[in-house]
Image 1 (cartoon, each protein chain N blue to C red):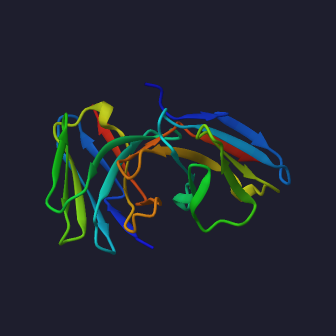
Image 2 (spheres, rainbow over the protein chains, first blue to last red):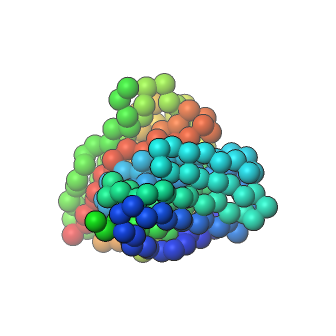
Length: 111
Length: 111
C-alpha cells in the first residue's frame, strides 16, 4: 500500500510568516489531495493535484505536485491564525476508491 | 448545497455492545467511504460503497461492517465493541474520482 510521509510533524510560525509542508510518497504519485482538519472535526478539502508539475492556489495556499520526486508541497503565504490546524495529504494510487493519508502536520500560528 | 451529514456526533458505548453510525452523502454522490482516525494509527480506510455495493475494504476485523441504501445513505456497524475502537469515524462522499468531501465525523468512546 502507498505510504505517505509528511514533514515536518509540527511547526510553529509567527503570524505573517510563510510556511511549507511536504508530503513524500513511497510510490509514484498520480494524484494527491490536501485537507485541513481542526482537532476532532472533519476534513476540509483544500486542493486536488492530478498531474505532475501541476500547481494550484486558493487564497494564500499554494500546492505543487512533483511527480518525479514523488512529492507534493503545500505553501502558505503570510500565515494567519485561521491557518492553524492539522494538514493532511492523501492519495489513491490504485484508483480503487481507497485513500491513504500521511500522519499530518500540525500548524500553530502565533500572534 | 448540504454537505456530508454524519450522525450521531458523539457516542459513548460500553465494551461488548454494538453501535451503528450513519452517513448521508451530498445529493447526487453515489460513492460513500468510511475512515477511522485514532492518535496512534492516523486515518485508516474502512470500506467504500457505490450503488449499494462494497467496492473496497480495508484491513479491519469482521466486527466492522457497512451497507449502503438505495438513496446512497450509508451505515457502518461495529459489533462487540472493544476499548481500541474508540476513535473518530469519518465518512466521505464522492462523485467518482473527482474528490472526496468529508463529514464532521462521529466521535465514539468505548468505556
